[in-house]
Image 1: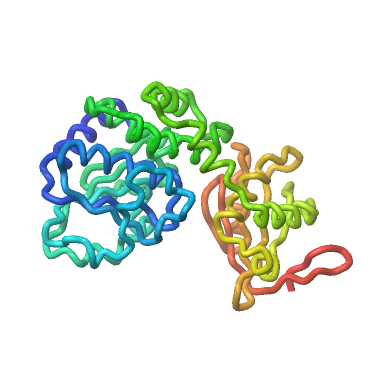
Image 2: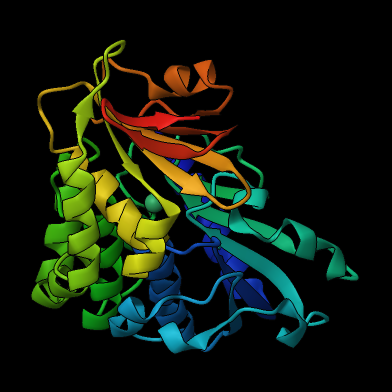
Length: 325
Ligand SMILES: [Mn+2]
């Protein structure tokens, strides 16, 4: 997006916020540090501007996010929102409305509210009336930081901590290829405003539990190289997940960790699901590999750096290793 276009959208966004009667803030389902950091930062700005709002997320934010100021404000059922008063809905970190989990709730408004979004996904559909979208940004909180700066909105220590959280989590603490001069600039600005960096790092990166690491250990021990494509493969069974009480978040963690492997161009995690199904998740950090195409070969799809597929089958351990039957 051109600078002029960004400033134009930012100006309209600020006018929409200041003119709204009641604002609904939407963080996407299965919320991460970016969508929650952005929404909680905005909540504090709205408090300072004496605006009334409700924050909604289809899935309740997990306990690891309790360090974010205002995180307790989220509701998970729209029935509790004051629909007749809501005239502006703001989406954070969602490339389209279905991804936000809000598509089925749009019908409940008697009068269609204005839609505003802050996002950084390259796949963004520009679905809102005002789209503050910067595809080159590493996180939505970086987009929001640019918006606050452009509108001369004061950023205090708590707001800075929320903005930094999205910058840290979406770049895996400034180590993945999304990290740019601009994302580091955003982080530096947050630190200058007093953001609690050690706390953000501790709560988002050093938060693994023993059971998670033990499951990782089992998955790491099973790591093999595919015979057909330049890809490392590991498997996780339903029994493993039950035994260690693992959730999606801990499996997400190992997928990111396996991206540290330099030997192969991509990694594949094969996970056994309920009902005789198998889910495969491809990851890569390389720009010369498109795992979306690999997933397509299995009837799935996704993006260049993360993609997946689901097929019928179950995991069986044989003498030559794990097989899908
Ligand atoms: Mn994001």
